[in-house]
Length: 82
Image (tube, rainbow, N blue to C red):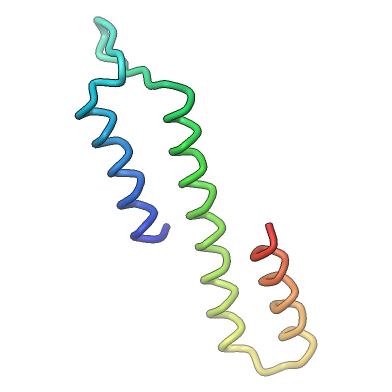
C-alpha cells in the first residue's frame, strides 16, 4: 500500500480520536460513524488501485515483447479510467 495512503488513513483515525467522534462500549469495542468508515474505505480502495498500477508499470518496464506490452498498457489504461 502506498505510504501516502497509510499516512492519510492514520490522519483520519487520529482525527477521530482527537475529536472524540467515536463511541466505546464497556467491552472496549470502538464504533465510528458510517461517513468516517466510508472515508477509510475509499482510502483503502484507492491504495489498492495504486498498488496495482505500480506493479503494472514495473512489469511494463521489464517487458520487451509487443503483444505483452499492449496487454499491460491496456490494463493500465483501464485502471486509470476507473
